[in-house]
Image 1 (cartoon, rainbow, N blue to C red):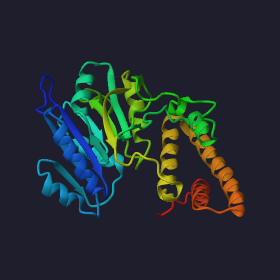
Image 2: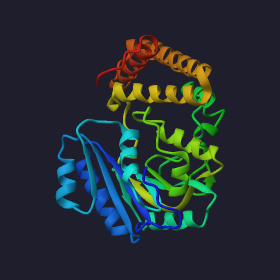
Image 3: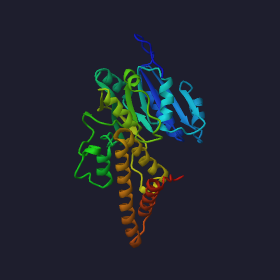
Length: 317
């Protein structure tokens, strides 16, 4: 971890860390938007997780000012971000997704907002799916209870896991700031440490935010600035890969074990397994009457989850 000596300050107001994997063209748009919309002194660190689409070459050729780490294997989201955090020297640290576009000087605005709120340890901004639609980012702590509400379709009765009814136009303290834009002051980072690379992808931001809250700092959603999420629109179920579906459940199980103990892990596994079995039976029976690509995909995902939680089998694709 790069730690600045007491009483000194970085030449950079913000270090922007972007983890990339095979998103060359949208990464180019992201980097261009940062250059166009950011006035504060800043450094950009791109950590490429062994992309095969020419992403590292594009960064080196078109954005020579960017600090590039080109991994020879995919280390995962948390571990790659940690590589960037390790060499970052900015007074603030921004984790930013490569599929985002900075709008209206968002980084400058949120940096100033953070300066004015010294009790905040992590802040996120407004995220748009398209020019008219605000994406519902940020959520409550993903413990077993909130997980059960989501998995068993009880969100109409209990809105708190995903903060239902909140349109993201007002400021709010949240348990988890979205990992696509997380701005953290360096002193907070130095107190809580790096992301936990036990999370290959998913739930690492929930763990980081929980650790930030545990040291007495607030995690806040502030709508003072906005970014565009190029892949913010929902994908059809048929497009979801079994590997990533299971990985999300695996990460939530790791989170439960870390913060809720062995009993929390077992409850989480039981919730996922019960939900997968119920969905599998339901979509299997419905599919006998009328099979559609979406129903077949849901059945496939349920089967992948059951095999993982019963036998530890992780899908390859």
